[in-house]
Amino acid sequence: MGLVIVVAIAALFWLVRLTTEVREDGVYVRFAPFHRSFREIRFDEIESCEVTEFDLLTYGGIGIRWTPSTIAYMTARGRGVELQRDGEKSVVIGSQRADELVAEIDGRL
Image 1 (tube, one colour):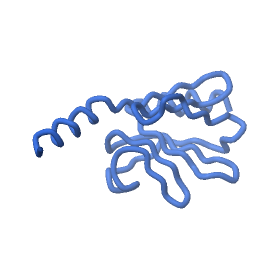
Image 2 (tube, rainbow, N blue to C red; image 1 turned 120 degrees about the horizontal axis):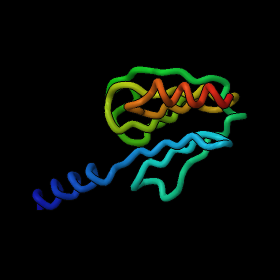
Image 3 (cartoon, helix red, strand yellow; image 1 turned 180 degrees about the vertical axis):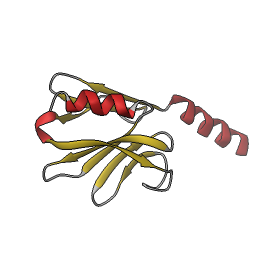
Image 4 (spheres, rainbow, N blue to C red; image 1 turned 90 degrees about the vertical axis):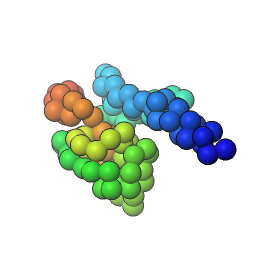
């Protein structure tokens, strides 16, 4: 039974993918296999964006994390992009190319 659990957890980690796309109307995030479709953050909702650094315990581990003020999409510790939204929770998206992502979003705000 223990081996089955270990294999299931390993398979889940192998399947986890965080995909971020910057499109004409906003930033789209999909955290597979948990999201079947992309979650949209429209540019008119975003007040500002900046590169941020975090460790695994900043938001409580990897995965989709909620705090009173933030929704975080994490696959590893390191760098990401924090999107401040008008009247809503901020969104933190983990990214290996955080500088490029901020530049692309800033160019469209």
